[in-house]
Image (tube, rainbow, N blue to C red; front, side):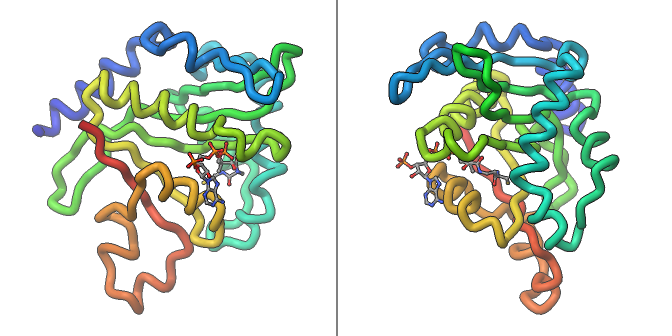
Length: 208
Ligand SMILES: CC(C)(COP(=O)(O)OP(=O)(O)OC[C@H]1O[C@@H](n2cnc3c(N)ncnc32)[C@H](O)[C@@H]1OP(=O)(O)O)[C@@H](O)C(=O)NCCC(=O)NCCS
C-alpha cells in the first residue's frame, strides 16, 4: 500500500465524523446485561461535551494513575489530557439507561510505519476503560468488536494498541481477542537485553 493511500484512507474515515455509527448494528449499541440496559454512543473531539470529557478522564485516572506512576512514562495529567483531545479523537461512550457513564473506548483512524518504513492505515485503540463494577460482562469485547467492524468496512487491515506489560488483566483480554505483539513492539524488534528496558507492548490484530 502506498503512503498516499494510507493517509487518504485514514483521512476519509476521519472525515465521516460521527456518521460511522450508522454502520453499526443497533443490537451492538443497545443491549441488556443482568437486567441493566446499556447504550453506546459515538463522539468526536469536536462534539464531545466538556463535562462528559471530564467524567471520562476521571474514569481513566481512577483506573490508571497508579499504573502510569509505576511505569517509565510516569503520570503527567496535562500531557494525558492533551493526548485525549487530539484532533482525530473518537470516543465510544457506554452509559446505562439512567445516564450513568460506565466506560469508553478512545480511538483514532491513523497510520503507522512498518519495519520497512511503509505506512499503512491503522485503527488505533488509544484507551479502553470501564469502571470496576461493569468489568467481565462482555462490554469491553463489544467495544472492540465495533472497532473491528469499522476496520473491515473502511479497509484498515490492522487494529493496534499499547499496553503496560504489568497490566496483565488487560494483556490477557487483548490476547483473548486475538491481539499479538506487533513487529514494531520492543519485544519483537529489539534484542532481548535492549527490550528489557521497555515496560510496554505494542499489540495488533489483522483483519480481513
Ligand atoms: C480491560 C477491560 C477493558 C476488559 O473489558 P471487560 O468488559 O472487562 O472484558 P470482557 O468481559 O469483554 O472480556 C472479553 C473476553 O476476554 C476475557 N478476559 C477479560 N479479562 C481477562 C483476564 N483478566 N484474563 C483472562 N481473560 C480475560 C473474558 O473472559 C472474555 O472471554 P470470553 O469471550 O471467552 O468470555 C476492562 O477490564 C477494564 O476497563 N480494565 C481496567 C482498565 C484497563 O486496564 N484498560 C486497558 C488499558 S491498556
